[in-house]
Amino acid sequence: MLSKLTFTPAVGSAIDLHASSGSYKVSRAEGIVGPPAPRDVLKVAPGRDGSLDDTRMVSHRDIVIEGEIIGTSQTDVWTKWDALAAAFQSTMLSRGTLTVTLPDGTTQRQISVVLSGAAQPSFEGGSAFLQYQVNLRAPDPRWLGTTVNSSALGISSSAAATSSTNTVTSAGTAPALPTFTWTGGTGTGRLVDKVTVNVPSAYSSIAPGGSALILDDSPTATPLAGGETVNTSTRISTLAGLSATTEWPALYPGSSTWNWSIQTSSGSGGTTTCTMTWRDAWW
Image 1: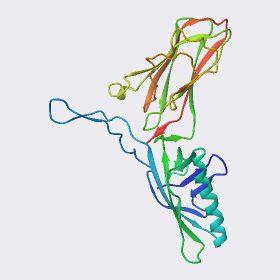
Image 2 (image 1 turned 45 degrees about the horizontal axis):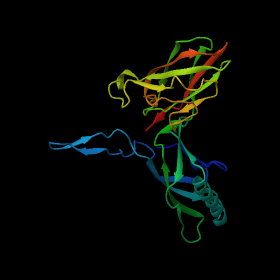
Image 3 (image 1 turned 180 degrees about the vertical axis):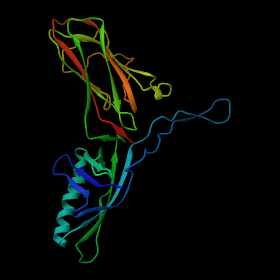
Image 4 (image 1 turned 120 degrees about the vertical axis):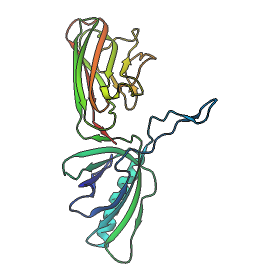
């Protein structure tokens, strides 16, 4: 089902856990494909039979890998296992990246993982062969594309009450969570009014946040000077004064129109650019 499976620790070299050639092979894996378990939100229906089901999200992704190491000698196997065990253990300091290459041999998807159980090796007698099982957890359950997509909207720093719009396409099967970055401009910059992402028509009536997802900056916030970022995946923002009505825009599969508008300007010239970057996402 997979052409290659590669584990890349934050420190050290990438290891091909499975490939057409090499000493590492995967005999069995769970949790590689398909959405993880739903995160149940179930309430008793007051005054009548049944329940109110508000389940909309999924939990983290658990991945179990059963692999083999085939070496030229017992010492060779032990050395390779030491390298693999150290790579898994390093996720306790910083998450590693698991990358799958699909059966077509070219399409790749990646996910950030942490060790969630014992990495257990098993071997017999004097053979140069070792089997192991490792449990990994992906806090963000989506598989992401290896290509970073981007779309940029520019507005003159001397303009007020204006906006710019573009249409982008998310090619995955799961909502992609973008990052917005503001650069350029002169003077003290502009006050951000809002960024609006209009979801594809197929999701407009069922998206949890509604058909228009709005990232809203307070009109009394510190003027935008460039270099500010908003990461909707981690929900970390360097913008001053995000409004209480702010939502965290997502790119649902298909085509989405997004708009950046400003209300006031104190810049003296040039253009400020709002760039949206994202990786397509899959279950």
